Length: 396
Image (cartoon, rainbow, N blue to C red; front, side, top):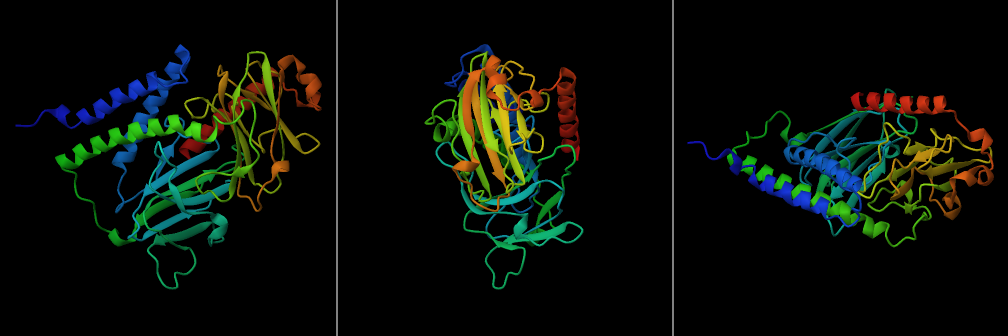
């Protein structure tokens, strides 16, 4: 007799019920819209947790997209494609691919995963400037145990290595094209993993529930570590990004703006950063809708003023400006600026200056206001271009 079909999924179903309670009781929820966005976030988290549990194949790994428009987490960068594969420190892995034309391509080896109490250790982090790439853009990397004379493109896996993360970062959504990447375990090439039995499936459902709850608890707690001690409506000086991305600096803050207020963020265009971008995030610590609204901009997408500075305007009401970042009804949230593929450390002079004004005061507070104006037709064209670019990127 076949056992009750629900016995395998019960732990996962219980975890979903607990997750729904976490969403409903989140401390930042004030309105019905806050709660509805939480349920949307929950759906993406369920989907991502199932994918992570079923893709957990350290001896037969493959890259999966770890976040996207429908699986958001951790203030995901709208300009980045994230891929990850599970690994172990006693195996050798071959990573092959073709370098695309994106602004940055980076690799990171993590020890453990994000949890509600800590950020995982980064055991290695580098971008493609550290590897040999052929004239046709092709490359081969090997990750594995320590060896004598490893040669170029070999990277030793430190004790506890558990995940390889790859980030492909766009600066110009319209023209840059993604590359190719794949991974295989050298030690198991040509073999096959065992067919999962009932016990294995039961374990996967249980693990999925644990991943879901850990994911939600972690990123509800995460902003407390990095944001809540900062004064509202300010941004930090550029600093090396926590988590070991050595070629990335970031500036972070949280905002609270009224319907007739605007935050002006002025930052120099950094010639030493092939990628420089700003984004807004909700209090669920995920990006706002960056497909159908302009809630993020890279330096290549933004208007740079004649004095070499970029002036972003964060506001609910449309100011009719090219660098408007839409709040889309979010009067509270997060702001983050990132610089990547840096050749030098950044200092205070590279960072942003923030001013909160009334939206009607913008013509007097922006030195190049008249030149930065856009018509409704031009704005609609900008949004259409975003929609097309994301569609192409997701299928590329």
